[in-house]
Length: 108
Image (cartoon, rainbow, N blue to C red; front, side, top):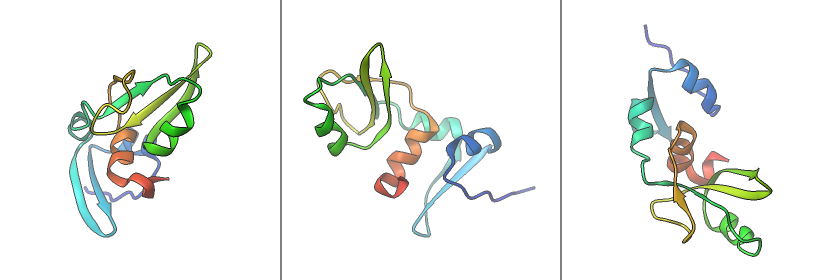
């Protein structure tokens, strides 16, 4: 049985789907299993703890999948093809990173 489930709520997709089809402006842009889609993001997801004077610039310049406070510091998770900041470290991608990478500004 095939069920087509259209949503932008990534946690729903992770819970239900075995295979994902990404369609943007009516065109198929990617298809695959969740692990396959996520593995294509290796090396494109970064975490950085910026200095307070760098925070706004990074937020304006790069798509981010999260912004959290950890140990009294702001941690930004950025999706980008290359290292966005000298202090940025690569981190494990998740399906939400795929969504942000593929849909960019349309994702928000």
